Length: 329
Ligand SMILES: [Zn+2]
Image (cartoon, rainbow, N blue to C red):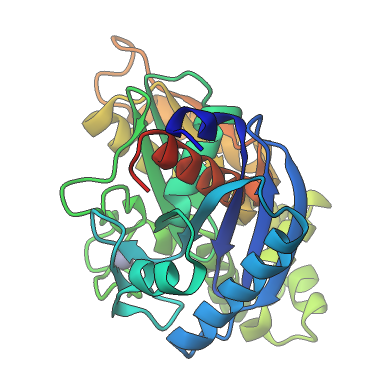
């Protein structure tokens, strides 16, 4: 195979989260033609690699000869080369040589990197950020992930860890974060933040939180972001207020990102993005008010991701295809 042929071949994309390894065979036009998944045994590095190898084996058995390589996006911080996972809040990796281990096991061309970076690339290539000069991805899940595409390239910073917007400090000495700091953006504008604020309110204002508490037999500590989302969709005033609050925090953070990077578009993905305009409308309102130099400069478009839960798979697959076609995998 010549490098140029790679652009016309399917690739295998893998997305590793805290609970599952999901994989897909992805055609050059971004469509997924087959999928497989395994549970992630998060406590052990070698068990996680076993799960990755099992997904690759299952998918490549049915598509042998058509696959250009394997792209792996994982919920962790990578060094610039993608060789080493420096840290992963929800998985066992600490300075782990994931890329080398997978190269030995899989014997295929590889791209290895951050899952939100892969999702950002997918949205740039096939989704809501198609063709943008500078696109930012903000994924709202357990935390806030991020990625940046500038001038047609994924940008990962000097040390590989750019785009961790979730750890901008938005509240001095605020809520404690898994990164070791306090007051990080993801403590106020993620799915976890939605649940935490709901629990705080439900403990102190049990009457106002009546419908929320009904869902968890009166035990405020069991409230999740999904509980709040479901009631907000049903028009519950308190749930709507909590979702609006997350949206306003989201807009404030985007204004700060716009002050630094001046993006054309900010794509909102992850579980919380399923709330759509309930979160995005207050986010845009806050952005309009908080954008530095407002009224005298354009701001970014704020849109929902188009590729949904499969963005990480699609992006990782396309990134290995790109790497092979450039002789770099
Ligand atoms: Zn943090």
